[in-house]
Image 1: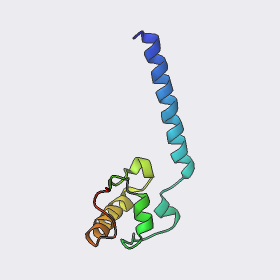
Image 2 (image 1 turned 180 degrees about the vertical axis):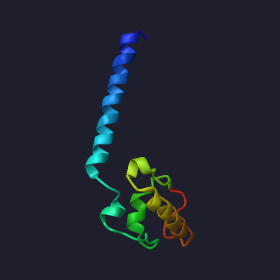
Image 3 (image 1 turned 90 degrees about the horizontal axis):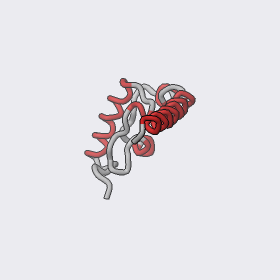
Image 4 (image 1 turned 90 degrees about the vertical axis):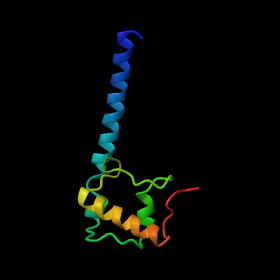
Length: 92
C-alpha cells in the first residue's frame, strides 16, 4: 500500500474518532450525575439494561460516559440483579 493511502486512512480514522468524542462531549456529564443519583438500585432493570450489551457485557466508561465512582456501583448492582435473576448472565 502506498504511503499516501495510509495517511488518508489515518485521517479518516482521526475524523471518526473526533466525531465520536464530540458526541460524548455533547452529552455532557455522567447520566447518574445529571440525575443526581446517590445510589444505583439493582431493581431498576431498565437502567441496568441500557448499560449492558446484548451479550451481557457491561459497557465501558468511555462508551457510556459514566464516572468511575458510579461504574463501580453499577457493576455491583448488575451482579446483584443477575444473582436474583432480574438480568440474564448471557443472552441467548
